[in-house]
Length: 163
Ligand SMILES: CC(C)(COP(=O)(O)OP(=O)(O)OC[C@H]1O[C@@H](n2cnc3c(N)ncnc32)[C@H](O)[C@@H]1OP(=O)(O)O)[C@@H](O)C(=O)NCCC(=O)NCCS
Image (cartoon, rainbow, N blue to C red; front, top):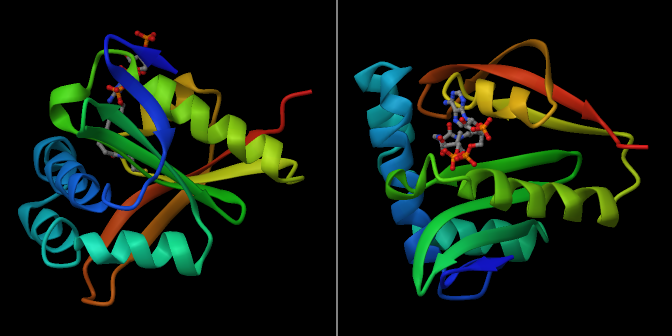
């Protein structure tokens, strides 16, 4: 998917610094409206390290896509197992339809590469309305707890494989 030099493409080695930057800024500038400062500090703090994406992509064979604006990472989305996970947009790229494009590439890849009848997402409060627009329905509340003990109220959401 390409437009005006912006495109969605698979992860390439070297993207991880831009991914970490988009991730950190997304948490601090977008999710901060829905979560407490202590939660944001932990979630968007020292745990965000470029090498951790490389690790999960190579070791877990996680599928990962990025929004590439002539070298700037505008967002990323991946899937692993039965879940789409790690979908964050750089704050300067939100509200322009790019999130939908990026998400659709990851989701299409998920349906094509797996046989799973259902796609699961653990959604932040921040992204719940976005996922509802993408056809996902809330199954239950879900609490995501980090090793630090800090936890985040989230929503478990699901969508059926399209016919
Ligand atoms: C949620 C997020 C990915 C949306 O990205 P985006 O690029 O702004 O999305 P788009 O511009 O493609 O929007 C697609 C549609 O969703 C809607 N939408 C997006 N975010 C929304 C929100 N927070 N509330 C309501 N609607 C929203 C848009 O209005 C648009 O609808 P339309 O086509 O009817 O106009 C982005 O805001 C984000 O990264 N949030 C913070 C990180 C996060 O919480 N990630 C989820 C981890 S599970």
